[in-house]
Image 1 (cartoon, helix red, strand yellow):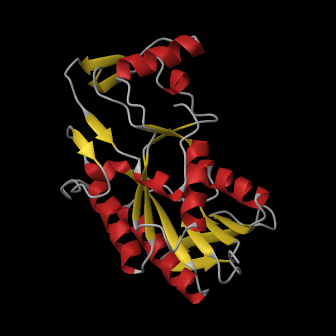
Image 2 (cartoon, rainbow, N blue to C red):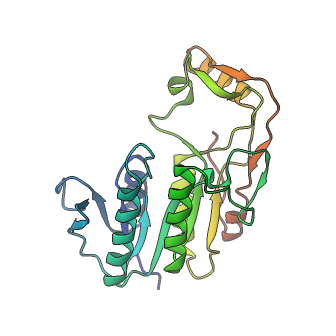
Length: 254
Protein backbone atom coordinates (compact mmCIF):
# COMPACT_ATOMS: atom_id res chain seq x y z
CA UNK A 1 0.00 0.00 0.00
CA UNK A 2 1.17 3.51 -0.81
CA UNK A 3 2.72 5.37 2.11
CA UNK A 4 0.63 8.54 2.40
CA UNK A 5 2.64 10.77 4.69
CA UNK A 6 4.11 14.01 3.41
CA UNK A 7 6.31 16.77 4.83
CA UNK A 8 6.28 20.01 2.82
CA UNK A 9 9.15 22.36 3.59
CA UNK A 10 8.00 25.88 2.81
CA UNK A 11 4.23 26.39 2.97
CA UNK A 12 4.35 29.44 0.74
CA UNK A 13 2.59 30.11 -2.58
CA UNK A 14 3.48 26.72 -4.09
CA UNK A 15 3.85 24.68 -0.91
CA UNK A 16 0.43 25.67 0.42
CA UNK A 17 -1.24 24.50 -2.79
CA UNK A 18 0.62 21.18 -2.51
CA UNK A 19 -0.50 20.80 1.12
CA UNK A 20 -4.12 21.52 0.17
CA UNK A 21 -4.23 18.89 -2.58
CA UNK A 22 -2.30 16.26 -0.64
CA UNK A 23 -4.75 16.58 2.24
CA UNK A 24 -7.68 16.41 -0.18
CA UNK A 25 -6.21 13.13 -1.48
CA UNK A 26 -6.08 11.66 2.02
CA UNK A 27 -2.42 12.29 2.83
CA UNK A 28 -1.25 12.96 6.36
CA UNK A 29 0.67 16.23 5.97
CA UNK A 30 2.96 18.41 8.02
CA UNK A 31 4.17 21.66 6.46
CA UNK A 32 6.70 24.21 7.64
CA UNK A 33 7.24 27.94 7.80
CA UNK A 34 9.91 29.95 9.54
CA UNK A 35 7.37 31.51 11.93
CA UNK A 36 6.10 29.83 15.07
CA UNK A 37 3.05 27.56 14.85
CA UNK A 38 0.23 29.02 12.80
CA UNK A 39 -1.99 25.95 13.15
CA UNK A 40 -1.48 22.36 14.21
CA UNK A 41 -0.36 21.24 10.74
CA UNK A 42 2.14 24.08 10.23
CA UNK A 43 5.43 23.35 11.97
CA UNK A 44 8.34 25.69 12.53
CA UNK A 45 11.52 25.10 10.52
CA UNK A 46 14.05 27.88 11.00
CA UNK A 47 17.83 28.16 11.03
CA UNK A 48 19.48 30.77 13.24
CA UNK A 49 23.25 30.89 13.77
CA UNK A 50 23.65 27.45 12.17
CA UNK A 51 21.17 25.95 14.64
CA UNK A 52 17.98 24.34 13.39
CA UNK A 53 14.73 24.92 15.25
CA UNK A 54 11.99 22.58 14.08
CA UNK A 55 8.89 20.80 15.33
CA UNK A 56 8.38 18.18 12.59
CA UNK A 57 7.27 14.85 14.02
CA UNK A 58 6.10 12.91 10.96
CA UNK A 59 8.31 9.89 10.37
CA UNK A 60 8.44 7.48 7.44
CA UNK A 61 7.17 10.28 5.16
CA UNK A 62 8.05 11.69 1.76
CA UNK A 63 9.55 15.17 1.85
CA UNK A 64 9.15 17.98 -0.68
CA UNK A 65 11.36 21.04 -0.38
CA UNK A 66 9.35 23.95 -1.81
CA UNK A 67 11.51 26.65 -0.24
CA UNK A 68 12.48 29.10 -3.00
CA UNK A 69 16.22 29.83 -3.15
CA UNK A 70 15.86 33.61 -2.89
CA UNK A 71 18.95 34.98 -4.54
CA UNK A 72 18.75 38.30 -2.70
CA UNK A 73 19.38 36.53 0.58
CA UNK A 74 22.72 35.14 1.62
CA UNK A 75 23.87 32.04 -0.20
CA UNK A 76 24.60 30.14 2.98
CA UNK A 77 21.13 30.38 4.48
CA UNK A 78 19.31 28.44 1.75
CA UNK A 79 22.01 25.80 1.36
CA UNK A 80 22.47 25.47 5.10
CA UNK A 81 18.73 25.11 5.58
CA UNK A 82 18.67 22.42 2.88
CA UNK A 83 21.60 20.56 4.46
CA UNK A 84 19.88 20.52 7.84
CA UNK A 85 16.60 19.51 6.20
CA UNK A 86 18.27 16.51 4.59
CA UNK A 87 19.79 15.51 7.94
CA UNK A 88 16.43 15.89 9.68
CA UNK A 89 14.64 13.94 6.97
CA UNK A 90 17.13 11.08 7.34
CA UNK A 91 16.69 11.04 11.13
CA UNK A 92 12.92 10.74 10.63
CA UNK A 93 13.37 7.83 8.20
CA UNK A 94 12.32 9.83 5.14
CA UNK A 95 10.97 7.65 2.30
CA UNK A 96 12.16 10.04 -0.41
CA UNK A 97 13.26 13.68 -0.70
CA UNK A 98 12.06 15.78 -3.66
CA UNK A 99 13.65 19.19 -4.29
CA UNK A 100 11.80 21.93 -6.18
CA UNK A 101 14.61 23.37 -8.28
CA UNK A 102 14.47 25.62 -11.33
CA UNK A 103 14.91 25.31 -15.08
CA UNK A 104 17.27 28.28 -14.63
CA UNK A 105 20.00 25.65 -14.08
CA UNK A 106 20.18 25.39 -17.88
CA UNK A 107 21.23 29.01 -18.29
CA UNK A 108 19.88 31.55 -20.77
CA UNK A 109 21.31 30.42 -24.12
CA UNK A 110 19.18 29.29 -27.05
CA UNK A 111 18.68 25.55 -27.35
CA UNK A 112 16.44 22.61 -26.56
CA UNK A 113 16.89 21.51 -22.96
CA UNK A 114 15.76 18.20 -21.52
CA UNK A 115 16.89 16.43 -18.35
CA UNK A 116 20.04 15.15 -20.06
CA UNK A 117 21.19 18.59 -21.23
CA UNK A 118 24.36 20.12 -19.76
CA UNK A 119 23.84 22.73 -17.08
CA UNK A 120 25.06 26.31 -17.28
CA UNK A 121 28.52 27.16 -16.00
CA UNK A 122 28.64 27.94 -12.29
CA UNK A 123 29.78 31.50 -13.01
CA UNK A 124 26.97 33.23 -11.11
CA UNK A 125 25.80 33.00 -7.51
CA UNK A 126 22.42 31.81 -8.81
CA UNK A 127 23.97 28.88 -10.67
CA UNK A 128 26.21 27.98 -7.75
CA UNK A 129 23.24 27.85 -5.38
CA UNK A 130 20.90 25.95 -7.70
CA UNK A 131 23.43 23.36 -8.79
CA UNK A 132 24.91 22.86 -5.32
CA UNK A 133 21.42 22.31 -3.92
CA UNK A 134 20.64 19.71 -6.58
CA UNK A 135 23.94 17.94 -5.95
CA UNK A 136 23.26 17.79 -2.20
CA UNK A 137 19.87 16.18 -2.78
CA UNK A 138 21.15 13.73 -5.39
CA UNK A 139 23.92 12.61 -3.02
CA UNK A 140 21.17 11.57 -0.58
CA UNK A 141 19.33 9.64 -3.34
CA UNK A 142 16.70 12.34 -3.60
CA UNK A 143 14.99 13.51 -6.77
CA UNK A 144 14.79 16.88 -8.52
CA UNK A 145 11.83 18.72 -10.07
CA UNK A 146 13.08 21.61 -12.22
CA UNK A 147 10.24 24.09 -12.43
CA UNK A 148 9.69 26.56 -15.26
CA UNK A 149 8.30 30.06 -14.65
CA UNK A 150 5.28 29.79 -12.37
CA UNK A 151 1.86 31.29 -13.06
CA UNK A 152 -1.47 30.79 -11.34
CA UNK A 153 -3.59 32.33 -8.57
CA UNK A 154 -2.25 35.80 -7.64
CA UNK A 155 0.45 35.45 -10.31
CA UNK A 156 -1.33 36.83 -13.37
CA UNK A 157 1.24 37.83 -16.05
CA UNK A 158 -1.00 40.66 -17.25
CA UNK A 159 -0.66 42.26 -13.82
CA UNK A 160 2.95 41.65 -12.80
CA UNK A 161 4.44 42.50 -16.21
CA UNK A 162 2.23 45.50 -16.96
CA UNK A 163 4.12 48.48 -18.39
CA UNK A 164 7.54 47.10 -17.51
CA UNK A 165 10.62 47.34 -19.69
CA UNK A 166 12.06 43.85 -19.94
CA UNK A 167 15.75 43.22 -20.58
CA UNK A 168 14.84 40.22 -22.75
CA UNK A 169 13.83 39.99 -26.41
CA UNK A 170 10.24 40.22 -27.62
CA UNK A 171 10.95 37.13 -29.75
CA UNK A 172 12.30 34.98 -26.91
CA UNK A 173 10.13 31.95 -26.22
CA UNK A 174 8.42 31.55 -22.85
CA UNK A 175 8.87 28.54 -20.60
CA UNK A 176 6.03 28.62 -18.09
CA UNK A 177 3.85 26.27 -16.08
CA UNK A 178 0.68 26.64 -14.03
CA UNK A 179 0.78 26.13 -10.27
CA UNK A 180 -1.79 23.32 -10.46
CA UNK A 181 0.24 21.37 -13.03
CA UNK A 182 3.28 21.66 -10.75
CA UNK A 183 1.32 20.37 -7.75
CA UNK A 184 -0.06 17.49 -9.81
CA UNK A 185 3.43 16.75 -11.14
CA UNK A 186 5.02 16.68 -7.69
CA UNK A 187 2.34 14.33 -6.37
CA UNK A 188 2.76 12.15 -9.45
CA UNK A 189 6.51 11.80 -8.87
CA UNK A 190 5.99 10.93 -5.19
CA UNK A 191 3.23 8.45 -5.98
CA UNK A 192 5.52 6.71 -8.50
CA UNK A 193 8.70 7.13 -6.47
CA UNK A 194 10.33 3.79 -7.25
CA UNK A 195 9.70 4.04 -10.99
CA UNK A 196 10.44 7.77 -11.21
CA UNK A 197 13.69 9.01 -12.72
CA UNK A 198 16.05 11.22 -10.68
CA UNK A 199 15.24 14.49 -12.49
CA UNK A 200 12.16 15.92 -14.19
CA UNK A 201 11.52 19.24 -15.90
CA UNK A 202 7.99 20.55 -15.27
CA UNK A 203 7.22 22.99 -18.08
CA UNK A 204 4.11 23.45 -20.24
CA UNK A 205 4.59 22.24 -23.85
CA UNK A 206 3.43 25.56 -25.37
CA UNK A 207 6.22 28.10 -26.03
CA UNK A 208 4.80 31.31 -27.56
CA UNK A 209 7.03 34.37 -27.97
CA UNK A 210 7.16 36.73 -25.01
CA UNK A 211 5.56 39.45 -27.11
CA UNK A 212 2.57 37.27 -28.05
CA UNK A 213 2.28 35.76 -24.58
CA UNK A 214 2.35 39.02 -22.63
CA UNK A 215 0.25 40.87 -25.21
CA UNK A 216 -2.47 38.25 -24.80
CA UNK A 217 -2.40 38.40 -21.00
CA UNK A 218 -2.26 42.19 -20.84
CA UNK A 219 -5.19 42.44 -23.25
CA UNK A 220 -7.21 40.01 -21.11
CA UNK A 221 -6.25 41.82 -17.92
CA UNK A 222 -6.75 45.29 -19.36
CA UNK A 223 -3.20 46.42 -18.64
CA UNK A 224 -0.35 48.01 -20.58
CA UNK A 225 1.91 45.53 -22.43
CA UNK A 226 5.62 45.53 -21.56
CA UNK A 227 8.40 46.81 -23.80
CA UNK A 228 11.48 44.79 -24.67
CA UNK A 229 15.19 45.45 -25.01
CA UNK A 230 15.40 43.82 -28.45
CA UNK A 231 13.58 41.80 -31.10
CA UNK A 232 16.34 39.24 -31.47
CA UNK A 233 15.24 35.67 -32.10
CA UNK A 234 15.97 33.57 -28.99
CA UNK A 235 14.80 29.96 -29.09
CA UNK A 236 15.36 28.55 -25.60
CA UNK A 237 12.94 25.68 -25.06
CA UNK A 238 12.60 23.64 -21.87
CA UNK A 239 11.28 20.16 -22.67
CA UNK A 240 8.90 18.98 -19.95
CA UNK A 241 7.69 15.83 -21.70
CA UNK A 242 9.58 13.19 -19.70
CA UNK A 243 7.24 13.31 -16.69
CA UNK A 244 4.31 12.27 -18.91
CA UNK A 245 5.86 8.76 -18.91
CA UNK A 246 4.55 8.51 -15.33
CA UNK A 247 0.99 9.10 -16.56
CA UNK A 248 1.07 12.84 -15.86
CA UNK A 249 -0.69 15.30 -18.21
CA UNK A 250 -0.36 19.06 -18.55
CA UNK A 251 -3.95 20.26 -18.18
CA UNK A 252 -3.73 23.95 -17.38
CA UNK A 253 -3.04 26.70 -19.90
CA UNK A 254 -0.26 29.17 -19.23
